[in-house]
Each structure stands twice: as C-alpha cells, then as structure tokens.
Length: 314
Image (cartoon, rainbow, N blue to C red; front, side, top):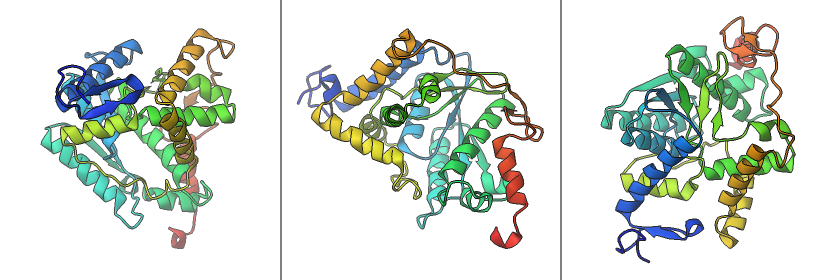
C-alpha cells in the first residue's frame, strides 16, 4: 500500500478515511487535523494558556506533544493517584510523564493526592464507602476537582484532555443506551467555562485510538501500556469492545456515529434545542469551587467523611 501524499510505502492505513500515509506524512497529518478541529470547535487560541491533563498514557502525552508542535502555550498537569495494582501503576505513569516533560523542556505541575489530602484514591474510596468496592467514582470526582482547581488557581484559560474517538463513542453509546438526555446535551468537544469552572476541551475527539497509538510510536513517545488495574470489567471497556466489532465489519462506524450525533445535537434534530438545566451554583465553603449542594461540594464532603473514619481503616 502506498502513501496518498508521496507514493512511497505507507506505514499507517486508515480504512475509515480510505487513506494510507507514510510515517513522515502521517506525523504531519495528525497535527494538521488537530489544528483543524481546534478551530472548527472554537476550542482556544494561541493567546490563551492551555493546561493539558497528562496521565503517562499515549493519548495525553501525544496531545501535549501535538499542541507544543503547533505552537500553543501548553503546560502539563499530572495527578498522582496512588494506584499500585501490583505493577506500581501510578509511579510508572509519573516517571514517564516526568521524563517526557524533561526531555522536551516543558513545564509540568504535579499534585500528589495522598500528600495533598492524606489518602490515596483506593484508600479514599474504601473509607468513604463510595464506588461499591471500585475506586473509579472517587477517582473521577477527585480528578475533576483537582484539574479545575489547578486551572483556576494558576490562571489557565482552558483545560485539555486526551479523550480520543473510541472514548467519546463509548460514552455516547452508553448514554444513548440508557437515554441520558442531560449527559447527551453536555457531551461534545467543548464544555464552555462557567464562573469558577474552566473551559474543557478534547482536541483528539475525532482520532481513533489506533491512530494515536501509531502517532506515539512514530514520535518515539514512551508511554505506559498497562490499563489502570481497576479498569478491568468496566462498562466503558465493554462498550468499546462492542463498537470495535461494528467497526471491524463497517470501517468508519464509530466516526460516523459520533459526528452524526454532534450534527444532530447542533441542529436540534434529536432534542428540543435547549441548554442543559443549570443548577444554582455557589462557592463551596471549604475549597471555593462551584457546587449546587448546600455547604460543601461532593469532593469536600467525601474528604470530611473520610476524616471521620477510625484510623485503623486508613
């Protein structure tokens, strides 16, 4: 198979686009497409400060690499979650993220959850009795709180995450199966900023996971290959596997599913066109972040509950 641009031997075949590219042109195509998506969805400009949430995985490190190559003012944020799983997952993720930042002379902010709040994510999950034995709900709550806190406190205009098309299609699939209109109305490449809440963007939302894997390998980005040890058996993985079966038979299914959803949502074809219901927000009495709950936000209520547990459980 030959590269569509130069006719040389292709390295990456993208069946959904009916296009194959050599390594050199593939490494040009990914940033060019990312730039197009940033402009198409009005994510941010070169005058704005971007904070990239990096986990040590291929997507987030590749996103950081792409934004820097494109000339954006992008720094990184790594959250140490204290997840071991027998493989030292968090330690290895931190090492790879730190090495990437040092190698490319980039600014990396690091927040160690255990040092900051006294407990790792698995321990917080156990002593707060959230998540039914798995810390995923606590992890998501903590990451959202901390990413917004750092973006707000350090003056960043936008928070960028490395969610790819496979991630977005799986979330959309789940929300459609369970018909969650509020979640469906909020899903998209950009979640606008509100008072106290940073704008959140997903510049990789139209790239397949395999494309981002190919990019990371071609760029020589060392990343953690293992999934989070708590991800096994998750519904998101099940949805991804189900969509992969459709994709194997009909290349482009995931991209069409996601893009048609965005078009339908924008035009109002699927829903009565309205903004998601906005709860009355006020600052949390403890951390100052916006919350609709009286007194403390969900994150601070979790910390308060954890602090009341007997020490032997910690």
